[in-house]
Structures are given as structure tokens and as C-alpha cells.
Image 1 (tube, rainbow, N blue to C red):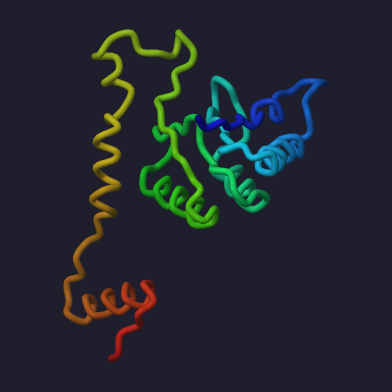
Image 2 (cartoon, rainbow, N blue to C red; image 1 turned 30 degrees about the vertical axis):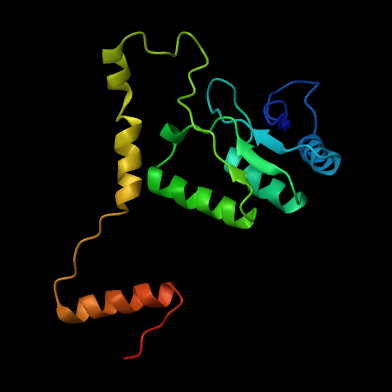
Length: 167
């Protein structure tokens, strides 16, 4: 069995006289890491249950912990552009040295927010498969029209990959 803790990132953004300082979240994560817990989790919600942004919170947690897995419970991909989200997730995974665990969901926690029928679900937006399919295909860029433009693009891509071509 694996045991993790959910960091209270919601409590620190709620307006209240009892609102704890954000340092409470970071202390909880450090203690979980030191105590041998398996994971530290953060939630995601903008409207129903606002809290600290999960991916930036996980990057910070990656810097102050050394061992625990870092996860989202759950990340709402419909709130983000799929290419930008993929880039952010890859960055968090790289910075955390492979400790990232992504939990994805639709995020309807309020009965009034949940669609009641299949047809109303379709009206909300494109299905997750369509959004994920776009990420799998990668960004679509126009093909350069001239030979020189194609060579310049190939040179730039090779340079970005760390292998500058010889001209």
C-alpha cells in the first residue's frame, strides 16, 4: 500500500480570518517527504473550489522535496491549451527528476455543473480524445515554400535539439 497526503492549497486562497499562510502547504510537503510518505498531491479548480495553481505548486514542491512522488488530484485539462499543458507537464516532470504523477479528470464536483445528458456533454466542448489527439500529432506548422526556407528550418530544429548542423 502507498500513502500520500493532499496539500491544502485551497485553504490558503480562501478569504477567511482563519486562512493559513501558504508556508503551511510547503511545511506539510517537507514533513511528508521526511516521514516516508509515498506522495504529495495538489488539487485543481478555478471556479468551484479555487486553490493554488497545481503545476506551479508542484514545481515549487519539486524544489523543496527529494523523494516523494508529486501528483495532481485531479488536473483539469479542459481549462488549458493542450500543447501548452503538455509542455508544462514535461517541464514539471523534468524538474522533479521523474517524480510527477498526473491524474486527469473533468472536474464536475457541483451537481448543478454536471451535464445531465449525453447531448449536453457534447455541447460543453470537444471530447478529450480530440484534444489529446492534437497533442499526439504535435503542432501543425506550414511547410516552408522555398528550399532556403526549408534548410533554415532544418538548421533551427537541429540547433534546438542540441545538434547544430554543418553548413
